[in-house]
Amino acid sequence: MGTGGWRPAPQDEEAAEAPDASEPEGPPPLEVELVLVATASAASPILELTEARKPDTLVLVQSQAASGSQEEGKVRQSLFLDAPCEVLWLRPGATRPDANGRIVATAARGPHGKLSLALAHELSEPHEGAEVTALYVEQNVGALSRDVGRHVLDGLVQRALGARASEVQRAVVVDDQVHDGIVEHLKRTEPELLVLGASKRSALGRRLMRTAGLKVLQANADQTAIIARASLPLAGRMRRRIEAFLQRTVPQLERKERVDLVERVQSNSFWDFDFVALMSLSTLIAGLGLMADSAAVIIGAMLVAPLMTPLLGIGLALVQGNPNLIRASLRTVSLGFATAYVLGFLLGLLDPTFDAATPEMLSRCSPGPRDLLVAFVSGLAGAYASSRSTLLAALPGVAIAAALVPPIATAGLATALFEGGVDGGAGLIGGALLLFLTNAVLIVFAATLSLAAVGVRFEPGSSRTSQATGAFLILAALALTVGLWIQAPAPIERLRIQDALPENFQVLDARWVKDREGGAPILAVRVAGPGAPPADLAQTLRRRLSKPKDEEGPPQKGPQKVRIEAVLELVSTRGEKVDDGR
Picture 1 (tube, rainbow, N blue to C red):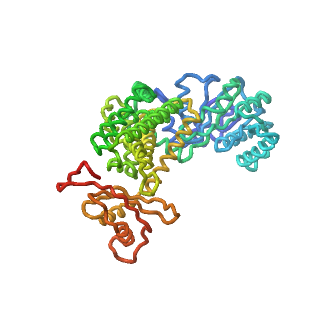
Picture 2: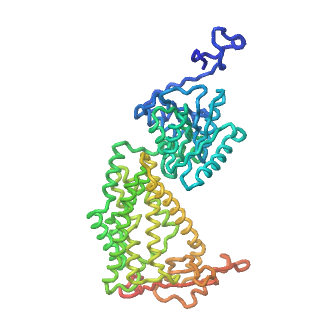
Picture 3: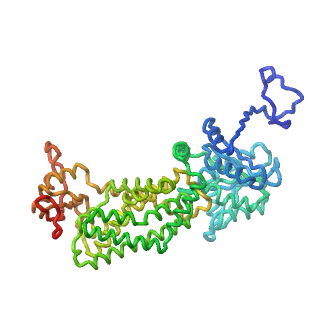
């Protein structure tokens, strides 16, 4: 592009050697390809074009200082966030930058801050006398704040520009708010151009366009500015490709469906009389079923339990970046848990015939990898069914699979018994609570993924509450997965334990626990049968687990200790359970 505007490229070598003398001297001709997009939103085809052509830079020019139409703003924000290459968002001010103008570039840690410094220096190179100032805002930490900021700024400029660092001036502003410090410097120096590095993207939020940069632009409507965003790393490109794949393969929710989903989940995620009533009734049903060792009654309690909805509410809030819904749902889950725990404890105290843990209770005190998978798949199914009104009939089945209230009731009943575990601690109480925590965390995690896949999108207004909750959720899910996977006995060990048991005995649980005396881990085994297990069962298991499966080769090192806890049930000759004994 020369002073005369767009010019066609020469058609042959002669034209290239003998240019038209009437054309003014200037930069060499620029070959331009014009792409017309005839769609409602230009974001998708432009993203596809950048994916195919792999440009170095995508420049988004705002037509005027105002934000323009709402649709234009959405397209620009989508491109700014999702384009794989580096993106420059140019916001023209009231005046055009001079050839000898002053340029201020904000310096910050990370690739976006580095790009802003490099871009400002590159823009100044063609113009003799252009002045570039690297600006850094340091928090007020005392008398040495400015010196600390200068030291940090020198390092940032050196890493961004290398040998060219000496060509850039430095300025340090001491202020607790970054945008206030930048605005103060702009008022004092009145630069022709401001170059800002985009804010970093958070773990579960999209903050690239919503922090210091926009606040500075809002406070300086006449300032010509560029917000620079470095090219996305591999993880960012993979995330965008996964999102595009889901949008093509998973039916996306329409606006009305999203509104119905949010209204339905929000209205059922608050602590009110209906929630208290259902929570209390489901706990009583679950407690009675656990004490009676009745699986059918426990299933009925799962159908009544309302705890699934606020967990889905947490997942919805994380996808939307809605801190108010996160706080309301967490409060409902916490109060619901406390209600169920207290009712289970009182139920166990008031029943004089309840004097031992039942097999249904014991089956809920040892979560393992399978419980993780069940909870995760239940969360996926529950969120997907909740998102579509035609699938709401599937929610009762999801509630049965999730099993949220029975573990809490088990913990309350075990507290009434002051039940200890096989490791000498509160094994039954702790195991039941761990099962509930596993189910709750994995359901929320899966619901977040499921709702994002069907088209629920992040909304502006994310806060540290949603970011901290999202980070905690990811860490908790990873910790539970690793912990339960490590403590679970190998399948071969469980089979060999079962082979060593007498006839009519069965392994209920086998896991590794710590030795209180600091020795090697102990293999804790819980077995059920019609009578007391043999006295030498622990020694038999220790010898068997110390040998290879085929009993060939040298003995392997097995557990130093094996603890056995028996769950006894009197059975008739037909194998039917007798009600009056355990």
